[in-house]
Amino acid sequence: MRIRFKPWARPELEASKFYRDNPEELKDKWTQEFKNKENPIHLELGCGKGNFISQLAVQNPSINYIAIDLVDAMLGLAKRKIEETYQEQNKEPDNVLLTRFDIERIMLILGQQDNIKRIYINFCNPWPKGQHRKKRLTHTRQLEKYKTFLANGGEIYFKTDDDELFQGSLGYFEESGFEIIAKTYDLHAEPIWDNNIETEHEKMFSEQGIKIKALIAKIKVG
View 1 (cartoon, rainbow, N blue to C red):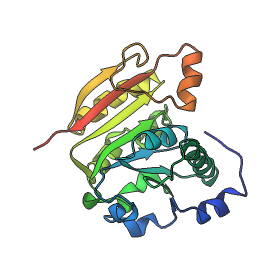
View 2: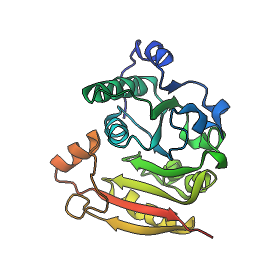
View 3: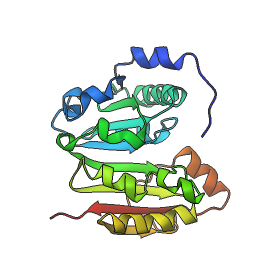
View 4: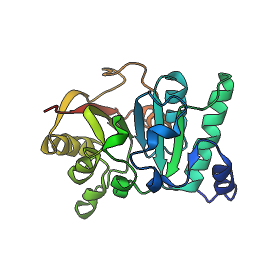
């Protein structure tokens, strides 16, 4: 998603208590950044404007969340959305952190000791052209990277509007040794998880009559 430059975003992020501008220094140390250090950590890749992560985090105070994006403007909007959502609940955002980084290089900021229990990938770029498919966040090349920091039995929750991306991803997960424990070609008619939080894209696609595809993949323990 393209978004206009927002000059206020960078200063606001740098002043925020729940933004981290030095993620490479936090590899294997993310647990120490949260108030409740014993809570499991879940990760959103490509948080966009923050509607999903803000609702998810405020509803689940016993889980810590890291949300990553590459664009300051997006992260600035996500930061404001998180503040707004928590303020409505009279809570402090002490279980969510934002950071800016290139997801293709994610192994530089997350390690085995971070023990990530779950990854959320929502409506990522489908990269339909053949030579670009390796850029997909669900491509085998990326899944192998996630395996270096996902906990034993860790899960990936994935949803998309794109039929070809979904079919390709089923193959990617199998090739990378993940077990597909649930899948659906119409998430709203056949939910595979409780309390689905709609993203901005999801609402738009659903209103256009496009069915939302989704899956849960799990690292095989062994």
